[in-house]
Image (cartoon, rainbow, N blue to C red):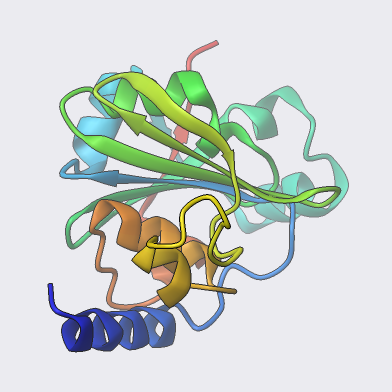
Length: 184
């Protein structure tokens, strides 16, 4: 991808995501080449129906309940899928993303309210890098990191771009296609 094309894709992706999800406390996993059905299969998860009241309860009142901690959303987007947990870190869990990254690559991020965005790269079932700061700008140790320069202050867009996801809107980050209960 040339420089002009990379800038156009960054602009398109940032516009499509419109800064969502907002705030802290959420996690996401961007996985190349998998759809939601394959996520269900690989995780041994059970699709569930979730009510608006449950979402409010988990997000605002009790994000640490067993039901909340074991529930994630998943959406298929162009290039792969997005796993999301609006109220916790489960979607960026190393074990979860290592299972999903078998034969592909995943980037997970937890928007930690205390220490900022924490990211990790998972490839072929192995965590390659962790304690990364997606959207945090160029690291002095890696001055040639083009994605870091392009996606400064855009952590969600950075995660998508890292694995080649091209969502056309913010739906995967605000109202996932389906909700899953993770096995214990």
